[in-house]
Image 1 (cartoon, rainbow, N blue to C red):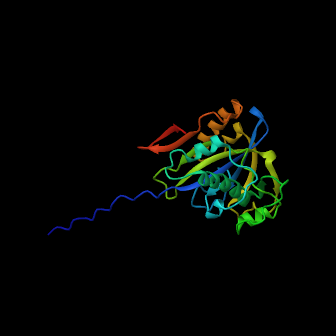
Image 2 (cartoon, rainbow, N blue to C red):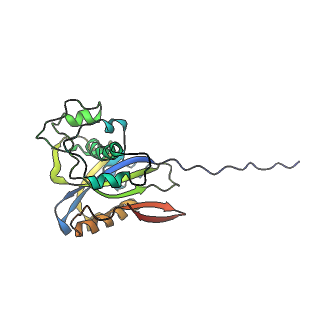
Image 3 (cartoon, helix red, strand yellow):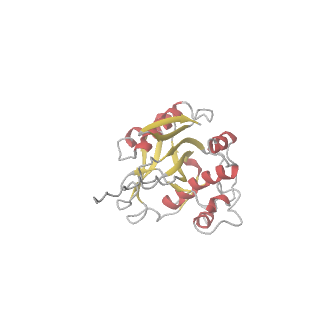
Length: 238
């Protein structure tokens, strides 16, 4: 009897994890600069690439107090095409972008006139609150949503937010160094940013950002949703 080689079943693509990232904007129009960080070269996910600060949503992001709520249109687009979720989910996405930015850069985005929340979740949010800030979501813009292709070992369903750098309320040193997740931060113009070693999706989002800046950052502009379909990038609108 001949041996029949075993058939290896196709690998099931990992389920994307909800994530958020924040594009900080310094300046106006064509002179706008953005903040990018270079990832550590030993990371398995996008080593050495320049990226926007960000990461996955954590349970603590659902319970952090805020000084101002999300714009209603931004909230509606965050929950679009996600059955079963609501405003709490949208709020958690925006808060994750602020928390991850603080964790990776030491920059606390928010308001100081109300003081810190009386009680913040343990961990990164407690460290954030120690700066005297409270998150303010009112001025956050939603630029894009993108899902990592199924072929990748790690996948994220990421929402790309943007916020003016004037909302940086506090800065804590020591978060960026040669052993950290981000080993370098750069403020750079859009044209020069496109010459850096960027992930493919970051380049696409930069193109969308450029168009929004040219249109005055109107909240009424459509928000693109990027994902892979049969090996090709698709661009829908939320």
